Image (cartoon, rainbow, N blue to C red; front, side, top):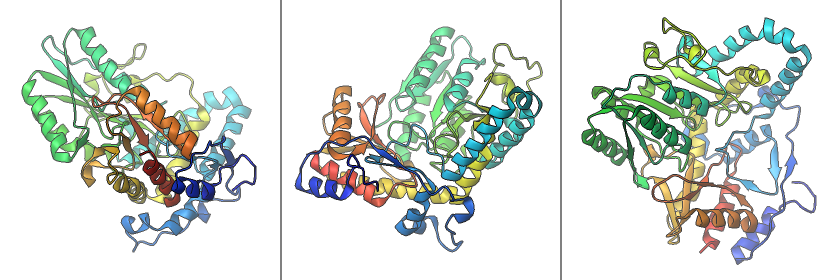
Length: 441
């Protein structure tokens, strides 16, 4: 830790929290990992060790943490916005930035297309998709917005469905779609705490009540509280009823370990800059073979034979270096291991959630069972559900206890505080959150 006088002293804070004292936290300082670190220095993982056993091995994750530059002075538990590049990925990104900045349009017009295909195919392989089923975008929001706006299979008496746990912008876009087509928009409200059966039953009930449903937005992992939906089961029932499914995987890939075929959906949008660890500004759009006819090409793009996934977006000039860095990001993600990462993040969530559930003044939101949980979680003070309540709570956590989180809105049950650790987050960091929660009483 830095010796700078503005640095946050964790030992002092832990003692202070135990005593119930209140402190003001200064801005964080940045401590860089050793620049000599390379993927070859990554600690070995025995094939005999299960992801669950590795998840609780603090010594192993302490050796992973130096692969990331660390901000000292605050415990950052808000990694759901975008993820941190590992040191090797960051160095690859810097190299690619220099390359593009040096070669400029000569590179972009003569060689970038080939390199972009390599990166796109790398993503497809990692997701278990066919190369022609995937196109790179700038983010999941762009991908999902295009799917919703360009969906062309709605009839006069059809309806569309979304839920309160969906991303706020997507809910508004689904409502816009219904309004623009003069059809019904159905909003489903999921329980503030739910298990897989409750989630599935809620969707089936909505399907029964609205037999005219034609399109639904289905979120894999909710951005508000990390709830995992049984996407494959919901999608299977929806398909039997003639309901098309757009799946929002913005938060799920890398947070959970899965193959796109596991989800049983025709369309999905992804981020690579959250849990995969790419540079900011990289997403992907998946369109299963045979599904292109229901999603019109992007205005200005042409695809009369419905054969080009790429015609569903028009990203114009992109950050070339970010695209070039995708292979390095996926390689590092796979070096950790998708199952290992998922298990570690679930373990970190459990460390604070299991304690918070014992506190009468704390309401934990989201999963009631293991299948519905992810590494993300959320809470609020009981009875405090307004935006003002959540904003005040976020400020207290940051300014008094040195824990940075984020306010999430959109749930019908009210606003909350989201907690999102990363693989370099330690059990001691989570302990600081637990102590803060206790002192909120």
